[in-house]
Each structure stands twice: as C-alpha cells, then as structure tokens.
Length: 328
Image 1 (cartoon, rainbow, N blue to C red):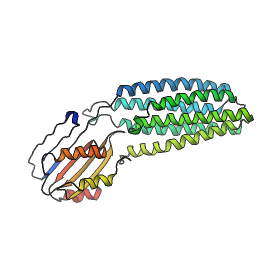
Image 2 (cartoon, rainbow, N blue to C red; image 1 turned 180 degrees about the vertical axis):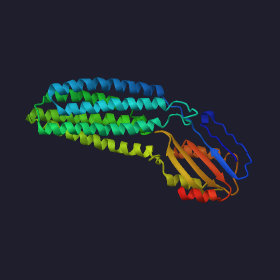
Image 3 (cartoon, rainbow, N blue to C red; image 1 turned 30 degrees about the vertical axis):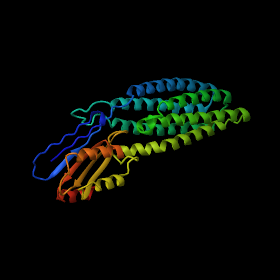
Image 4 (tube, rainbow, N blue to C red; image 1 turned 45 degrees about the horizontal axis):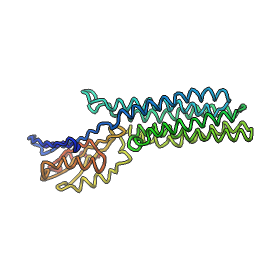
C-alpha cells in the first residue's frame, strides 16, 4: 500500500509509505487545505449588510403602514428574510472554519450547504406570506401614497445594491455567498418595481396597481430563487457540483499511464466551496513512481477544483472491482 499527500506550493511536501498487506491495493489521499481568504473581510461584509438591511426593514415597515402600501410591506417582509438569510450565511461561514474534531472529522464545512438550503426555503416561505397579503389587497384595495412608496423604495435600491456588492466576488465560487448575493440583488430589483408602481399610482390614482406590483415582486423572487433552491438541494443530496464534469474526470483518470480500469468513482461537495472524490484505479503494474499520487492530486485540484481526492490503486481486476462497478 502506498500513500501520497499533495499540498499547495506554499507548503508542498510529498510522502510515500510502503506497507505489506497481501492484497495488492494502494490508497492515495491528496488534500488541499485552503484558508478562507479575507475571512475577516467577509465578517465585516456580513456585519455591514445585516446592519444596513435591518435598519431599512424597520423604516420600510413603518412607511408601508403609513402609506397603506402592500408592495412596501411585501418588500419589507422579503428584506426581513434577507436579514435572516445573511445571519444564516454568516454563521455558516464561521462554522466552516472550525477545525476537524474526533466527531466531525471534516470539521463543520457542510454547515454552509445547510445554510444555503435554509436560505432557499426561507425565500419560499416569504413568497407564501407575500402572496396571502397580496390576495387580500386585491379583494379589498386601500388608498396608497405613491410618493412615499417611491422615496422608500428608492432608498431600498441603494441599500440592497450596496449590500450585494459586498458579496459579488465571493458569489462566483461559494453557493453560500451566492445565496446572500441573490437575495440582495432580488431585493434591489423588487425595490425598483415598487418605485415604478408608486409612480404609476401617483399618475393614475388606481390603488389596485399596488397589489399588482406585489404580485410581480413575488414572481421575481420566485424566479431568482429557483436556481438557488435547486443547487442547494443537489448539494444537500451530495450531487456532483455543477462546475465539475464527471465524464471529463473519468476520462482524465482513464488516460493516466498504467491505468486499465476506473471504477467506484464518486464526487460530492464537502461544503459550498470544497469538493471530494473517491475512486478505484486498476493498475496491474502498480503506480509507476512514488510521485504518481501526488501528481494526480495536484491535477485534480488545478484542472477540476477537487481538493480532497482519495484514490485506491488495485493491481488486479478483483471482486472489489466487479462489486463496486455495480454501484458506481
């Protein structure tokens, strides 16, 4: 049995160990541990976004009752769900940095996946609540102050856009941060819709425009959150991350020198930013050199963003290969 460990260039080391177990299998583990870059900055971003949005929710709720605007109250309700989602995402980002323990050997990295699922669910709870109030407003529309609607919603655009910018960079690679970004950008779009509705009410005096705008807001939220819900549930079910092509990974492994068969290949998310892999490689002549596993781990990280590969080398097409193939 041989094992290779690969680390980033900043602290690279390679180790190989030979053990005699009488079954001709080799196990390789490659691990890339990436400290959360600018973790302090993310904490500051969450704190600022929560403070801004919480203050705006309070102001918008008061304005909604004063103006009689269901659209403003609907937007305030959604903004409140954003505050909760930001707190969830923030807590998950902190928990994900916890070191491994005897009970949680991977640490608490998967808490970011749970937070993404919770945020997606929270959005749909908000949608249901807004729909109930919107239907009531359609049945019994009340006078609305369009001018106040426009002023408050205009402030909302600025608050949500600024908050979203804090997470724009991280949202490209972290579903947890993407959840926060989607919430905030949806709110900015919603606030724009409220401004337009307020303008229309001011011009026409038609009160039913307000619940109609609220209905449009609900549709926008549902559309923007569907992808988040789908992706977070897929991660929760340990599905292959969207950014990784399973067939391409298999093709790469099959093309390695000495590999005659690849089976029991599994790829799953450990968190919203880290991916793990396990695979069995049939190599009749064994690994060509001690650096084989280290090179494999390096390539999987840099070509496919898989930072936690575990590789088992088999020198024969054993019963293991046949059994694993049936469930791979």
